[in-house]
Length: 431
Ligand SMILES: [Mn+2]
Image (cartoon, rainbow, N blue to C red; front, top):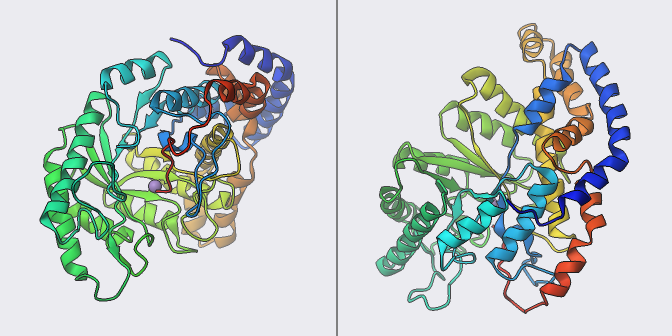
């Protein structure tokens, strides 16, 4: 196995601040012990956390209006994997990469898999793209893809998704995420029910091509690019379609794909209750599908989502394993730093959710002690578990402070020399 960053640099970084971490960890351990919680168990739990990286997230994203290239941006899927390897090396929380086709389509999947394995990376769910036209394709998705009125367009979109499954299979992936931008911009543009019927017909074809151990994730999104009536706009539609398609179809929640103030944790509870919660795209938002870093705007919401997930595990056992991926893209930070920060924020919510005393919470609920019920959650959310996360990283061979360690290596400057900018080559997206 190789590492992109010299592992000696990580050891050196950690040595400088290990003493501070030990002191913080001991203080937190004492405080948690007084609450009846074992810090060692929590650290071991933190070490089990994993979230997939989006291949397109390591490129500097664009806004809806423009793209501003960054220094040393990856120019192909191999360079994207190198950047992902840095993120995993310094956090040990991101062992897999979610590819997007055709942006990351490999000419030799076996070689790409070997390249990834050498950096201790694997491949997560693959993502199809029928929301933009690709070079050389015969039909246009201007008026829809899986829901298009034209049978030829639908067939092309179905064939692309099946190709994604085949590519993913060669890469060791076991899931396909389908997000479509299909919908209407005007009342009357299409028949609302007819569009969903065509969607289901197309998805049934893709479903048939799924290998036995694969899942298909239906990603809904309230609006954009269809502004009047997006075909798969909400979790209700997603749930209905996943139910219609069969057991291998699940619903995927992208945190940015809801109306403002939507109670997303309740959607989590509903989908989990009925066995259709498949996975998440983590990001944060203020207004819409902002694709900002996880936990940067509303960390309490992220905590409440994980609180529901912890409740599912508490009720149903550890077999429940939704698929986790970061999905962010913006202009103003180094993507490696942002993805490391986001992975840690999601991991933080995961560990904080384990601090909730579920027996006590249930007791408060049964007693109608509303204040104590709310406080049981707030106490967990207010607990700073940073030293648990840092200790988990040290024990897994990663950096105590990933961003500081990354900056100290000068990685971005070095790749800036080796990867001169080329206009328009980096696939970066806003899905
Ligand atoms: Mn998404």
